[in-house]
Image (cartoon, rainbow, N blue to C red):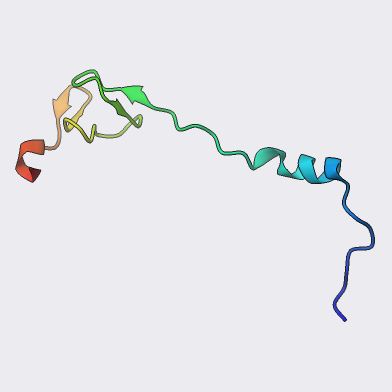
Amino acid sequence: MTPLPKRKISPGRRDRRRAHDALKARNVVICPNCGETRLPHRVCPNCGHYQGREILDITERE
């Protein structure tokens, strides 16, 4: 036989263990060029700008 737990884990102990498992909301910022939301420190997927410069030419991909 395989080993089994000696006692049932109480709901309080179970919930304290799961206290850090909740998903956190992603931090988003507004692109100053186009106004769309984007992840911080990333090139804007909508307009291709980052820190006031055009990094990606979006018209090429379309």
